[in-house]
Amino acid sequence: MKPSRRNPSLLAFLACACACALAVAAPSAAAAPRAHPSIVGGGRADPAQWPYAVAIFRKGHLHCGGSVISPTRILTAGHCVDGFNAANFQVIIGRPDLRNPALGQVIGVSSGQVHPDFEQTGLHDVAVLTLAQPTTATPIALATPELSAATTFPGARLRVAGYGAVNPFGVHLSPFLRSTIEQVRTDQRCLKAYTRDLFAPESMICALGARRKHRGRFKIHTSACSGDSGGPLVADTATGPVEVGTVSYGGALCGLPGAPTVYSSVSTSLDFINAP
Image 1 (cartoon, helix red, strand yellow):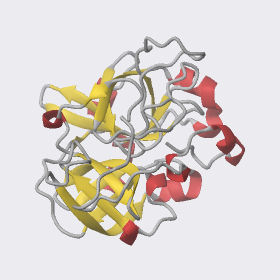
Image 2 (cartoon, helix red, strand yellow; image 1 turned 90 degrees about the vertical axis):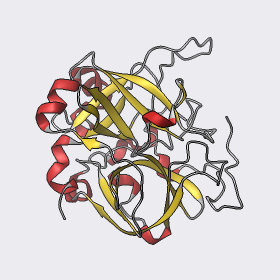
Image 3 (cartoon, helix red, strand yellow; image 1 turned 180 degrees about the horizontal axis):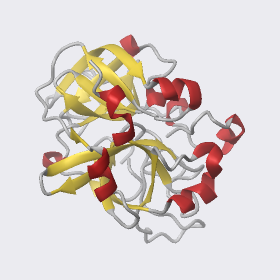
Image 4 (spheres, one colour; image 1 turned 135 degrees about the vertical axis):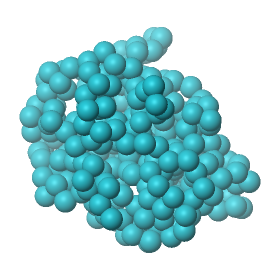
């Protein structure tokens, strides 16, 4: 996860997945990730519930998460693409266990587009990757403003998944897709944690999972973590799952009650995401 660039002085204590040196092997058919047994807390994801979840690799190492939104387009975080050469990306689709090269597809990326607001102000932390060839994976629907308002109120329960760190310190990636339940928190909670310099209620979602049974020094809740950036935050509706947010940033330790995870709201970026 990565903080917004609206206040660079806060970079020192907010986690940045793209800058972490996390050892995961290349996604080739002959190699498997050298990761420890993503999501802090939670458990192994049911592949049937996450057919659209992807792992984005850069130069052979896990870089970010994302989701299939059409046969040739992947939604991820802006900070996962901004400043990087999309030609160095590969997207792994339909492989819940990265150690099993017999499953899923590995597809190159022909281009990447970052939301212009993110490049200029740090707001709207979303980007779209165009695949070099189509995927057969089922895409995830995107929340409209009305649907987002109906599913992201404080107390609402949402799901998130990724291959990121299982440790609150942002280390030890998962070789398989993990998921957890996040509860939407009040905007005031994230404003207290990050101030207006980083948290913009108009385009961000504040969320944190349940407290883990953990006897360590810190009170840790289930949460997305480093390596999960760009992954989907999903609401289950009467008409099926919809993506309401993408993993954006969090605190120096993943899952701290005083530093919830922040997601970029998908519905506020639909014009950009749906642009041809």
